[in-house]
Image 1 (spheres, rainbow, N blue to C red):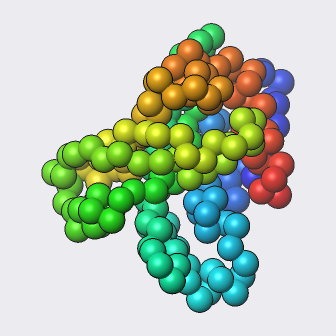
Image 2 (cartoon, rainbow, N blue to C red; image 1 turned 30 degrees about the vertical axis):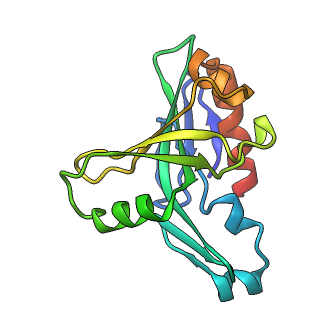
Length: 178
């Protein structure tokens, strides 16, 4: 994917998935939770299990369980929002409930989870407590960081970020994909 500024100041990117140019912003998506990313290739094949929406890591004494979620970051100086595709860890009970109801388009509930994606601009963002809210229609759940958790990412989530900062984040992520 790449960004380019057109003469009329709109920004486009060429999608590496479909090859088409898009004018809307791409979501900043993480392919796996940080916990999985940190595993060696051997560990990934032996104890890891990853697909587009679920991840499990089978340690000797426990199983870590993760689901893919979304987060919508508001901008304080524009009508747009910046979308993230992140991962959270869930308890066994919540994970199994979500998995069991994954194809149920009417399932709507909430879980407690821990953010498990590191957003580069903030250093370590793993282990931020979040409310995980499922949605009807089988859209991915959306997370809401706990407002009382003292972290710059949480503060920016509630206060908003600038459009320039959002574009910088997109540019940085796209550079790392190429």
